[in-house]
Length: 209
Image 1 (cartoon, rainbow, N blue to C red):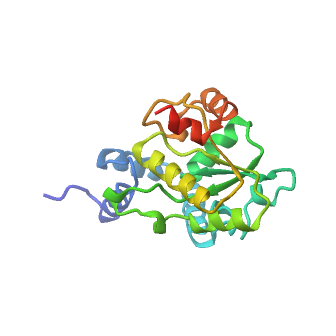
Image 2: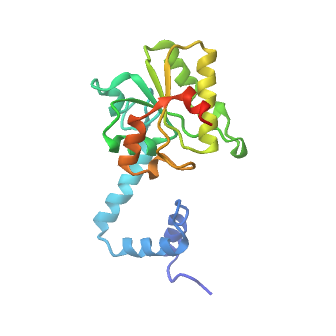
Image 3: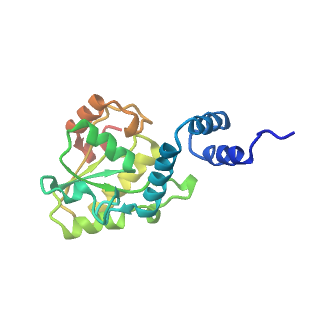
């Protein structure tokens, strides 16, 4: 028995259901919603998605998503280039920017070390981070990675590598105002802002464990 009365609708539902967090029922609702919109609105949505996918850049400095080779944060001369906040992905940048607390720049790793998922140091943007420390006048590295086993492992790897480099850069981490296992993107702005302001030396965070 044919499930859909239209192959076009079926194909749309199939592709929508491949998106994260979108099950088949939600995909059907979204497809039917699009059918009720004007052709112009749907075309604008399709064009926006296509343009994003074809024309997006990854910042040559911090690996964030950008409209050119360098993102707006890295281009901003009012940002403190001596402070580098290390995060997992672009969602963490958005979360921290929403707090309006941090005025430095970022470095996106593109994930965290997770041997179970086949992600090691070489799969992350770690070499470019260490290169920045060697070549730039970096004063502080702020580790703002998830409070998970993988996040802690990645933070410790960075810390040990910086020690091996004989780097004089200060290494801090956000305060544990976040619950163990929390992702930055899900923290409320006040809690995240306070955790950032009250950050501590990374070495002290190791001693507390």
